[in-house]
Amino acid sequence: MFRVLIVDDEFSVLEGLMYTIPWEALDVHEVHGASSAPEALELLNRHHVDIVITDIRMPGMNGLELIRRIRERWSGIQCIILSGHGEFDYAREAIRTDTAEYLLKPIHEDELAEAVRAVQRKLREEWDEISKSRETAMVLREHLPLMRSKALADLLHGRLPGQDKLAQKLEMLGLPFRLGEPAVLLLIRMEDEFYGYGAQGLRLLEYAVCNIAEEIFGRQFETWCHSDEHAYLVFALQPRAEEAAALALAEGETSVEPAEESAKRVERLAAQLQENVQTYLKGHISIMVGKSCLFPDGMHDAYESALTVFHRRIGNDRGLFYTMGDEPESESAESAATLEELYRLPTLLNLLETGGWDSAGEKLNAVIGDLQRRFPESREHMLETYYSIASTYSHYAHKNGKRLSEIMADGRPGAEDEAIRSIAHLKDWSLGGLERLRSHAEMNLHDSRKDVLATIQAYIKDHLHGDISLQAIADHTHFHPVYVSKLYKQETGETLSDYIHRVRMETAAYLLKQSDLKVYQIAQQVGLESTYFNKVFKKQFAMTPQDFREG
Image (spheres, rainbow, N blue to C red):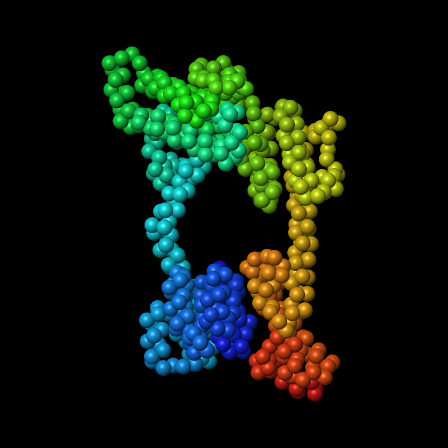
């Protein structure tokens, strides 16, 4: 998607280039026009532009000076010169200013289109180069904590890539975790004292806890942190390669297993972390030290078990420290009795609110599949699923100003009267309800878009003699110019510039037949300079305006 600025002091040339070139076919979705170099510089201050097409000879500042100013103030803008003057000095000066193309007037549309395509190729090559440069490396560094956190979240929720892909990702993120070797999970819950700081303050405190943990564990363990959806800080810890080797050597001298010794070190350091947080951050944390597991395959089960035991053993108590041991089967395996897919991120509500209808359908199929596979005989799990989906649908409907019963053709079945009779019935109801919600949302969107189209068309008809540039229309409708252009084409099949041209010609034809206005006055009424009006009218109707009036 490209944005173009055309600069020419001849109104007919400016209008012709703005409205007769098939810009959308050239992947140009925003076209600005300026009748002087100062006006062009003002537009560049307000709008991002990729390509500037400028005349050379203009009153005051000429096109070459404009290009020099652009080079001084903006990077990444390519310039094309259109000029009726083919003197060598101009061409030589254009080369000095690193002008992409130098074209002589009058120019054929195909010639300009090819020049634009060539400039676009050059811009794409520059963007590709930038993506590999130090700027991208800087962006990567800035986003590294978030990318690391998301990668750990995927492992904790059982989303395992292939070993090769995971190894590459770990290398890219600078995480020297070794595949197939033991690791330990640490769960930390920040207690009530910290929540008085507000959301922003809490994030800073979480960051501080992570820094303290990395300082304490970092000498002996690789550390990897994630703030999960349950408001826990989750640390994955793995002995550094040199520490693991030292533990393996020491095994022959003592009866202590490397994994056991590693777990004891985690306990000692975790206790130190708890004390340091209380001392320096003036608040309490509860800590759960999980059981050792193999990285990465055992991470999901270890995480689910740790969550379960955290709830059972620590619960609402504050500032506790607990190390998992050989938990009773009913506790350590309790996660097997939960509907994992139902609550896995993104939630069904997340997908509905972002318009991800296809993804929402996939989510429902995954939830029902999980229910059918693991709890085919459990009505309690089926009802949990039903209530969760029904409450999500109700919430979405209410946020959009409707009752769910108004959208669902058969209302909402109640569990109490056993309207949900089976998992198959639940699936039919869920997917059918999703389709009705989708149809309702699309109908509302269509109605909203019809209102926007009517506003655009009314504005154009009322302002034919004034400013009907894409920016002016966008300002009137309070939408971005690119959105206005794409919306109009998508809904009508006609480009906005084609519609403006059609309205101008239809209005001119009506005035020629139904009024006594002179031709130049009619040209003014439809916002065109007289000479250019005669030219485009003849192209449209195959006769001059005067012949049309007399015919």
